Structures are given as structure tokens and as C-alpha cells.
Image (cartoon, rainbow over the protein chains, first blue to last red):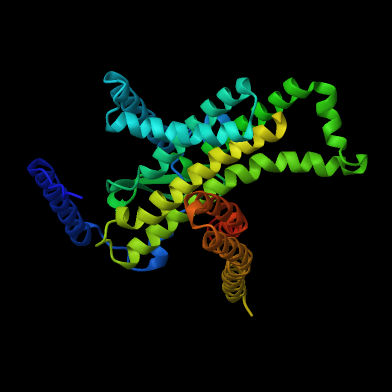
Length: 294
Length: 87
């Protein structure tokens, strides 16, 4: 095989990227204000930046980081889709062949588990959308050192919660939207409702209800709990992986005194584990729907 | 004992309980996924040794099964974080 040389442009880009990385690392060590103890560094790790009144119903409060990062992910995906669509041709470009092979890979899985064409197409759309969104949002922290939001929470005597928000540059990865349980639970509940709806439409409501009495009627509560446990385990699996990875990255980047930037450490939890979890999430979507349809 | 030292002792007991609980939770919770993933990996190796031409398919399925076997470990990680930071 002929060895391909790097173009000059790519070399210059790589050198600039590495220089910026090293400069940011040195600045981090000099000016980052290292916390004196590990306990200090991990004190606020479980707190989230929340806007809205501290009392009142749950839907009046929002988590701004999730919303901002979700829109960034959506923007990235739309930009990629538009750039593929712009020079769409029979002889595919690099981007187009990436998108096509990805879709073919997922469509093969869908077709092998759902033979009915009508349901296979819509399941494919759902699973593919979830896969792309979750994969991009898990990868997003990986390449650029990000802004982390440090929130200290104190509870006053009268039960009021006071949150102080501090922005820290380059000491953590970007916040992936999948590290918030609200995002994952939304998708898991959506998949649950869609799969039950398909089940009712395919079998008819009588046969669907009768399915809960299989194999013997005494197992009815077991069957109901088994169905309800699906969205819980579906969402918590992704949430636990990504959040646990984020906290481990924070710990490790404290132990190396922020000299190696978190994006290097994010390599395992974001790129390897994140892609696998995105794949698992979409495969389980297909499996749950096919268990109702087939 | 006066009021002050009782308070300090109570705090110390709470901290000790949290540390012991978190350590036990993570340590015991990691046994199951370890054994499970070991089984999955071992059988995948057997299958690859028997049919090397199916390596790609087997590795994809193996990773999927690994991720599902990992779930209980992830639950115990979550509970550990809850004990340490939220309780």
C-alpha cells in the first residue's frame, strides 16, 4: 500500500492545535487555582445549575446546561446533515459514505428483528435518531477542553436553597446532555409509549391485555412490573455510564493536577464507552419495539 | 458528655457510615458484572477460536452483552454517588 503523506495544511492545523493544548494546560496549572484537597475538588460534583424558583412545582425549574448543550448537539447534527445533502451524488463523498454505511448497519439490525416493513421503517427512524443524538452528545466533551459549572449549594435555616454558580475554564469536559437523567428518561419513556402503542395496534387491545396474563394469570403483577422496569433500566444505564465517567474524569484530572487536559481522559468514557452506550440504547429500542410487534 | 461533643461524635458516625456503605456498595456491586462479563468474553473467545471468519459479528454482539451485564454495576455506582453526595 502506498503511504499517503499529510498535506501541509493538515500539519499546520495539527501543530496549532497541539500548541493551544499545551498553552491551555500550562495556564491551567499556573492560574487554575488548584483545590487544596481532593475532597475540595469533588465537593460540588453532584450539584447542578438550576434556574427558577426554589419552591413550587417541578416544571418551573430548568437546567440551563442541558438545554444549551442539547441545542449545540442539534445544531451540529443539522450542520452535518446539510453538508451531506448539499453534494449528494451517486458516487459518494467521504461524509456521505459515512452516513450511508451507518444507516445501512442500523437498518440491517432493524430488518432482522422486525420483518414487517411498515413498522421496520418507523423503528429505524426512531433508533437511528436516538443513536446519532446520543453518540454526538457523548462525544462532545472529547475534543475541546470545556467550561465547567461549579455550583455550591447551601440550605438555609428556613429551608430555602441558595446556589452559587461559578464558571471554570478548561478544567473539565463539556457537559454532555445525556449526563442529565431528564434527557434519558424522556427518550426511554417515549420508546416505552411507542412500543406499547405498536403492541396495541398490531395485536388489538384484547390480545394486548391478555398478554399480561401469560403464561398463568397469577403472574399479572410480575408482568406489569417487568414492563414498567424497562424504561427505568433503559435510561439509568446511559445516565450512570456517562455521569460516572464524568466524575471519574474530574477525579483523575485532579490527580494529574490538570496538566493532562480532561479530553484525553474522556477518550475511554466518551469515545469508547459513549459510542457503545449509544449503540446499546438504540439496539434496546429496537428490541423493545420488536418484542411488542412480533 | 456535653452537647458539643455529642454533636461531633454523631457527625463522625455519619461520615464513617457513609464511607463504609459506599465502599461496600461499590465493591459488592462490582462482583456480579465482573463474573458476567468474564463469561461473555470467554464464550466469545471460544466462538472466535471455532469460527474466526465471524469475528466482527461476534465482537459486536459481545460488546452489547457486556454493556447489558454491566448495568447492575452501574446501578451500584449510582447508589454510591447518592450515598456520598446526596444523602
